[in-house]
Image (tube, protein in one colour):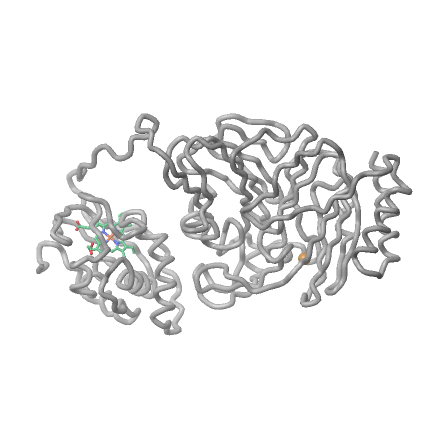
Length: 494
Ligand SMILES: [Cu+2]
């Protein structure tokens, strides 16, 4: 089988090599070559429809094999990695992850890989769906401004990763050169209401997480496997807010989840959901009732579940610091009627303060200050990250807090009245009675050992959000407050 395959491959490649004319002619001749060599003669030719994440091409309804023509272009381009942070991505099709391809078991694929004339690097493609040397890598090595053609037969169904395999391979993958190809089994996949494409990747930048500007790739961190960013679909927040995946109560959702790596293994989890079915590692084994599924680097999984109640379901890599501190967090927003039996929502909230409670400190490595002065807008952009990973859990995404537990930062009279007092709270924590917007709270905020610029940015963000009065807090101002004795609720005025 594989010998036969290799023979076809070789003849296809040589057929392709003599071609210099336009793509159309190229296609015809390539199909001619396949006919001459193949025992199954006349397969209908179909142009593949490829999609950008999180979209997936429609399920395949045809009941016969086809010759599927896939055209894909590698492009190198600067895009947003996080708010205020840009990165020179290397891509399959202009985004990370690369375009989703969907074919059927038994199809013959003619693959045309073009490398944009604007590229600086040669690229190629190693498809895990290919049975053949290098998964197509050697046959698809393509210089900028060229197109390579090779063909393969999709022998085995499954969800497969594809990636660039041009040296240095780790760097090409680390810059975003990966995607998924689904080889549907002949019988097709069971019908579901929604299908989405989610792919994790780790990124290594010269600057640390959130440091603004165009960030170059850091080879040393990549070798040490210490990413600054771990993200879904190429950037921090690619699946958050308005870009969240959506579904309606009662619908079934199928996630095609890949992991491009280059290094990390993903512990993929959807908070508040249980996967009814997981096609383990993208193969044919079906596991049921799964909380978290492992997705190896260069691997995939298909996760299916029915959504029973409305709300925002957070997708994470459950190696949890990656989710809250490096970006591996996405959202599925489900709308529809509540079912209070399946999930009641908060039924009670009482203050619980065991004796001896006092302001505690959340240990947090003091990060090196980047001593360049940021503009107010830059502070706000970076402060948003600090807020999202350090404050949101208690004070909530909209800053409204939680009644009887966490005071609001939104339109907070307490905050707006005295910025230095707020800095002191972040530096030292706070406990005891406090009145915010006429409501009484008596709880504990732990000190969060952030750097002075992180505190300055977080407060500047908060002051300019949630209906607050505006203003700016600088790192120097925070440094000054570090030298002031902590204010406790008993000696505080107001
Ligand atoms: Cu490449």
